[in-house]
Length: 623
Image (cartoon, rainbow, N blue to C red; front, side, top):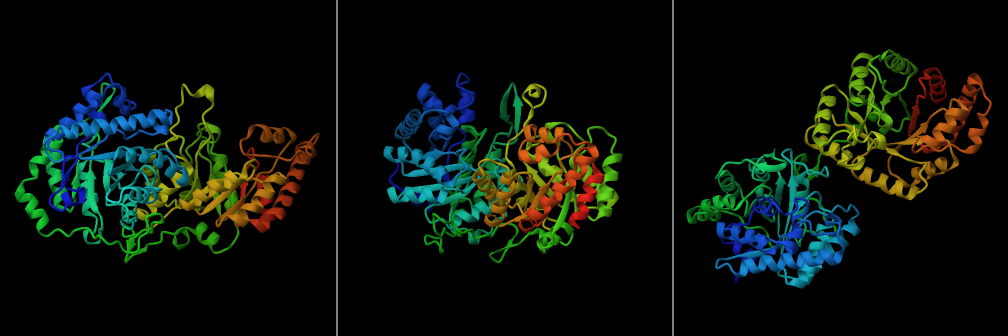
């Protein structure tokens, strides 16, 4: 730090101007550096990294970030010893550039998101990084491009204990629609950190360009903000040129928007992906003495005493969109008059949902006839799988719209993470909502068989729990008039059921209201279902799938993921013909119903091999 002031003292006199992108600009200037992890350049090309810092300082930046954004074992796939050396070297390079600079300058320890999803494990990972910076003498920290607020309160409190006069910033990566990649509303995360005593500045960066982040800022009630507000947008919209990402914003554009950001209440500005020293210079030119005087004449300082906050157990102020008078608006499915399935289920009445697999060819007569017959039989909803076993079938959402419109029956289409990213998912949800569909079952999706991976590429950019969180965020933001009831799957046949329960708890925390179980055809499955009933605060639909032959039993037991059949049941089908097997299937299904009835809120019946007649007989047992 080449100044006698603290960061807080500096910001109370004028806005703090940060540098721009290290990674994209370093790659532009040194194309021999690996595009994957520019942090390694701290060891392989330290002079190049220093030159970037110096370029930003000459452009007018008063704060620079260390080249350590992805410096963690998970991202770099390196041993902790190597990571520590990268961090130390990154700190040394940035401070060397700052010490050679004659103007005012602060160096911030830059820490990006870590792909660890357990709160305690994430804290331990942050701790490894933070301790190295503290050993180096760091007092200013930036946690940027965050997708959630997990462990931020805990780690920032730890930093304050070690360095009481430290200044800590947290910045969330905000999409133009206002969501993080993990499915959180950035406004909600922003207000969450307002009550974290150990964090000094909160804001947004990355993913979006300047205009979108300006809109985010303008939507905030500034009189309720307790922290300094920071915004570091991308240079503009990214495009691909010659296998590299370029940002095509015109000269001076970032500077003009930065001026509007400052006028809207922002105290800390800078740039993220695609920004260059030229962009930072354009902001610097806008920071005239007259502008600063106008900005600070009526600006209210952030409160130094926080109201009732605890940095380790943060309580959200919930002042974001969808929140009024400090109370969160409920977009609960049982409150939705348009969702008959949700209302019945949440009223404590048992429901019947029947799964029909979508056809592999355009002939849908059987599917439509089956759905119609199930409706007449009194089922509450038709469940439609999304390309099960990763085999292309008619789209589940299109069929859901068709049976809803033509048959007037509730549909529950599956929605996988395998075949579409979050943009495609949001577009699909918008279409479903327009068509009156307000139930979905989120699943990660079966992996594509290895032999087909050269022809078929999966997405898997998020899992079913994250997808559920996205949908609930959409419920709050755009589907408040007709929210989706989100369901999920529970594998009661898993050998490690503790892991399944833990994953189920995550789904519940992310907004899943109902869990559909795998078929109950084993003692383990029954025991686990009964355990789930006791331990999970959620509605459960018990899986019933009639076994129709000995061959079918062997196939299900050996080749269908998540299904387990007791050997005793398999043996009972041996040497049975079709008619005898169907009688046995009905008998076993009745036994399953009797065994699980006290542990479920409804039944999830799966139609095997187009055996609608058999399933109709099972429905009679349930009615």
